[in-house]
Length: 206
Image (cartoon, rainbow, N blue to C red; front, side):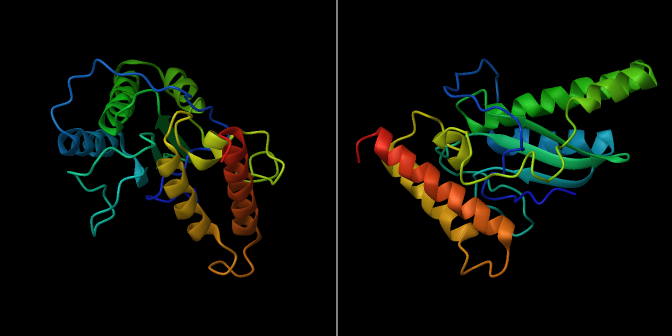
């Protein structure tokens, strides 16, 4: 299963990022409500080993805590096991975290409809598009990554300097070699994060 973290956000390997998230037209009553509705959709789908990954701090049970300020990076990624495969649904199209969560919820709801009314082939075809990429050289980040700095740091391209710096510090602490002795993957991620922050500062003349 994925090595994704619930906090901070772990964006799925190989998925593109939205550079300028838009304002959605969803009528979301509250973050807590859409969060709970999303978790219920996953339960009805039969999802196992669910990891709801965001940049929101967590309750003691590992679920994102309601009532927090909007994070600089509003993306949402949901990792889980469906039957015999690991899948991930991710959304960063919208500029509010609850709207991205709602987008994922509607997608899962639609796929549950396919499971009820479609054929087995239709269900399998739908889920193939959300298959989680396996770890390995093709998806592992490298120091020479061609990804933009905002993709590496998982922030919008327009994020403020303070927000980008705060995000960098979180990731640098998470992957720092002193915290992960002997972990080559963490070392690689730390190097990529550090390189991305250097490119960010150069781009903004800091």
